[in-house]
Image 1: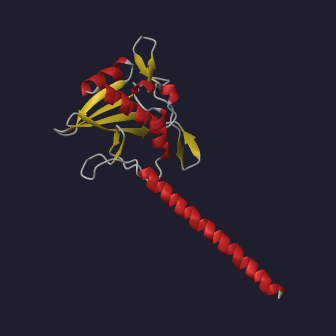
Image 2: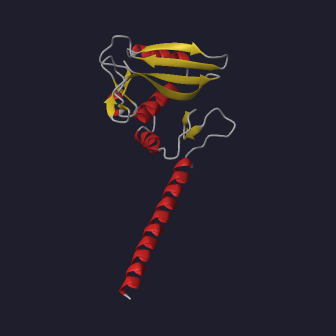
Image 3: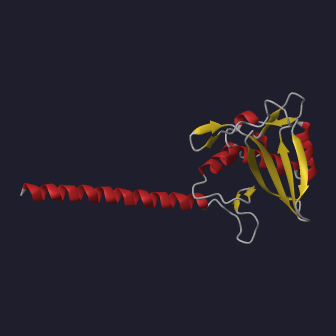
Length: 193
C-alpha cells in the first residue's frame, strides 16, 4: 500500500511541475507577442521595426527588452542632448550604456536635424569624423566614428564578449542610413583594435 501511495505522490509532483512548465511557456509566448505588438512597421516597407517615431531596418527579435527600455529612457531629442562646453548641444554619451541606447539617441538626433548634411556637420562640430556614402541614387549613409588616434573616444563604451567570456570594449562607428533623404536606420559597426 505504501509503494502505491509513494508512486501516486511522485506522479502528482510531476503533474504539478508539468503544469508550471506549461504555464511558464504560455506566459513567455504571451510576453513575446505583447512585445512584438509594439512593432508598427508595414509589410512592404524597408523598415522592419517601427516603434513610435523610431525606425530600423533590423528585426527587433522576440524579446526587444533593451530597445523598449532605451526608447523609454530617451523618449525624445531633448533627453539625448545636454549643453556642451562650447555652448552647443552635445549628445549625453555618459548616459548611454548599451547598443540600443546609442542607436535610439543617435536616431533621435539625426531625426531632429532632418537632413543628411545637417547631421554630418553636427557630428563634425562636436569632434567626430563623418563621411557621406552614396550607396545608390536613393540610398545614402553617413558614417560617424572617432578620429584616428583620438583617445579616449567620445562614443560611450559598449562592452562585448569574445567567446562569451572575455569582455572587450571595441571601437565602433555609427552608420546613419537614409532612403530618398528620409531617415530609416541607425546601426553600430564594431572593429577590434
